[in-house]
Image (cartoon, rainbow, N blue to C red):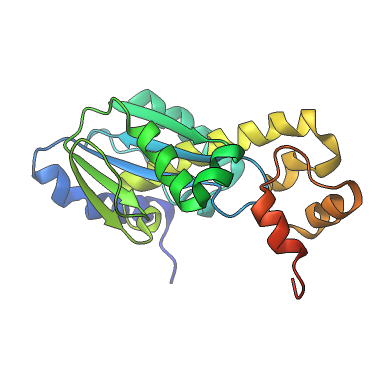
Length: 208
């Protein structure tokens, strides 16, 4: 049985409770955009107080766009700190997607008043404090889920801006992910500067 939204937020908060009890400032970090064929990868870093609890926070993928945007505004209003880090398509090409994700996360955490960082995903981040990688952290941790909302909303806005520059591809609709319409547009018009060339080459490989 799925949890109601208030219960779901409380479940995420209870996961973070152990860290609040340590009385050490901590942040949640997550990214958006590792999988798309186009656009940057974006990371969010959020330090939230234990009170007030922001109702409705959840993994950004489980929320509607309207709900994410409303929560984005509430998170930045309540947060002790929030940061955004972006790694460009050229950096993704140079560093590979994992390296670029780490770069975006490091940039997002710059200046965070923390000694502890809860991270959804990669280990090995060089941050000024203890780093705790948590698999599927955006589905477990209140702070990481908040960071996922910051990252997702920021990236979606960037993709809507890219849609104005490259209207043929439908970036505003699919946000650069490999939908059927997006793949058909790439095959019809070729890739633009915001397409990840390595990802596109894989798409064009035999058997893809």
